Structures are given as C-alpha cells and as structure tokens.
Image 1 (cartoon, rainbow, N blue to C red):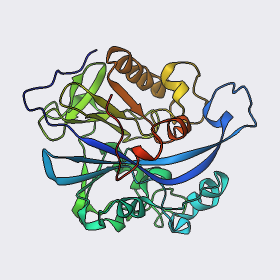
Image 2: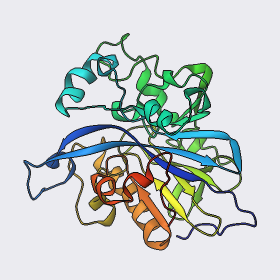
Image 3: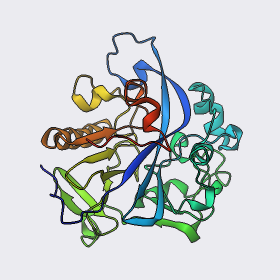
Image 4: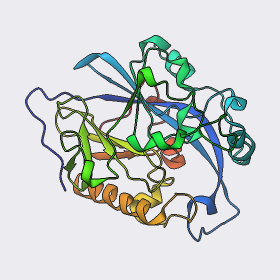
Length: 300
C-alpha cells in the first residue's frame, strides 16, 4: 500500500489552491442519513495550480471550478444545476491565476478531473493549454449540446486539436498496460512525466465516466498530495465517518470502492494529504490564504 520512495534528486511539485467559485449543497445530497438534512453546506469549487523547478516550462491546473459566465453553460445545466446549487463566482480560475502574476498563455496543461459543470470552468480562456481528460469522457459528448438540447455537456468544451484523452480502463481486453499500472492500492496510475513526480489516477466511473485524480509528489523526501476531484464530496467520506448519499454519484457501489482505495492510500502513507474539490472544512480550517496562489499548500 505504500508509495515509491524518492530517487536521488527526486522531482516534485508545489501545489497552490485556486478559489474558483462556490456552491450551496444540501447536506442530504452528500451525506447518507445526514444528522441535519436541512443543512446547506456552502462549499468551495477549488482548483489547484501545479508548478515545479524540475519542469520549469510547465504550469498545470487541475480542474477549473465554475465559469464566471454562468449562462454560458448548456441550458439544462444552467436551469437545473447552476440555479439549484446557487452557484456564485467572485473570481474564476483565470482571475485567480492572474492575481498571482501568471497570464492565461502561461498555462500549459489543464487536467479536468471530470466534465461536470463545476469542474470544467471555461477552458477557452487558456488557449495555449493542452486539456487532459479521462478516455471515457468521450462518450459524454456523443452528441453534446446544442446538437442534443438535453445534453449537459457542451460539444465545444474539448477542442480536438488540444485535448488528450487518456486510454480508457473500462475494457480490460484493450487496457494499455504501457500507460496504466497499479500503484499502492490504486489499480490504474499513469506516471505522466515519467519521473515519479505526478501520477494521473483512473478513478473509475463511479462518479462520472472519465473521472481521474492526481497523485502528486510535494517534496524530495516523501511528501505527497492526492487531488481527488469528486471522488468524495466531504472529508467524512474519506475517513469513513459518514457514508455517501445515493444519487450523488452515478454508481454508488463503484464510488465507494474508489473511496476505499483512497482511504487505504492515506492510512498507509502518513505524509499524504488528500485535497477534495468541495471540502469546506479544508478551505475554512486549512492553512488559510497561505495555501492559495501565489502561496502554496504545505507539504506533509
């Protein structure tokens, strides 16, 4: 269950949080048998900037949060999700990046954990970035909106000339074992830069097809962070203190299975931090503003 030891002159990454919107989530939507079902959790939509002295030409953003132009989403998303969750965006991912001194053209990679509206932001604002998504995401756009007016996924979200679809893991007979390898309790991990510094993790279709996470080295001597996207919506899911609510994932059983992998990973590696996109507790009780770009998240 433990992770690879660092090599000599081991590359690693600095991670900076980006505030990219907020949503009001009913507790019963996330927590099974919530103690206070009427509670509304004002949760952040967090994105994360990754930079490394070992990869000076790379500026990667993991997730983009919520787009500022809310009516730019497909109509079903705007009319049902955006309004139901009372989304608000004081700053989007681009504005968060610019506050710390980077420009849109400085961003080289965008990794979308999945294609739900509160994670995709507006990739068109970063015209030079390659967009990395899970391979199973393809089918969500077949067809997309507006070709299918009922689709929740805009057909122009992922421009083919700059989108990398990772090999799918859903079909064992076509599994690309040159890319996906087991790592600790994780069945499928991809050493993206080939130096053991950043692994993309196939998180399974439990939440949404194409869901991916990122396992990132944060120090040369054994620190790690796990960027979990929506593998869990609340910290209590990771610790096992609360169960996930039915309906918050496409397949509850598969979502629970992946959470169990993350829990094992955390238990076996005390110097690993798990960062979730909507973790209100971390946002309020973490390092505060020091964790946000141009600051950085403390390595474990």
